[in-house]
Length: 178
Image (cartoon, rainbow, N blue to C red; front, side):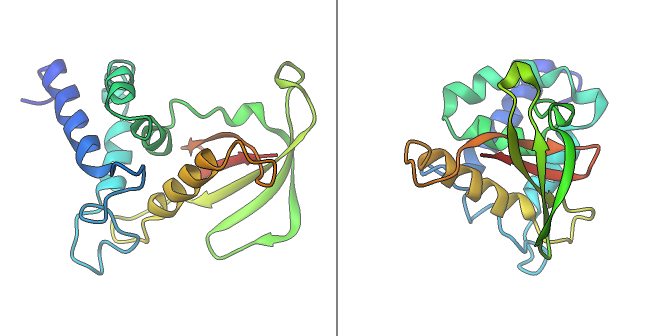
């Protein structure tokens, strides 16, 4: 029924985002956890990622975005980390891994920005996206990091976030920083 009625589909997704995103912008721990499988919780970010990136659901994204923008400034931020429609990996070229900048869940690269984006270089942090529903839910940490960078954006003491989102081609959550 949800897939046959476009408006109902959007309303259901809107409701899920309303429940998952807490008023402070973080993901509500009642619904999202870094280790949901261990805590016998449903891995909502993992399921939403697979739902939103499925080709049959692509038509929902343009209609969902304005509803999420009206809901909260934090909801579209989560959408960007769950849906690859907003992130353009081709914008960040001449990728070279920064020596010693790889951890258990992420790798850091130096990249060039296209001239039309101002040129220069940026840092690209690529966080491994979960492959299985029982994997660690990296979207929780990613969303927290993006939220904190967004909040601290005006400070000259904090790196500037240029872009963020899901890169389905690399199976990674990406942060572009300067």
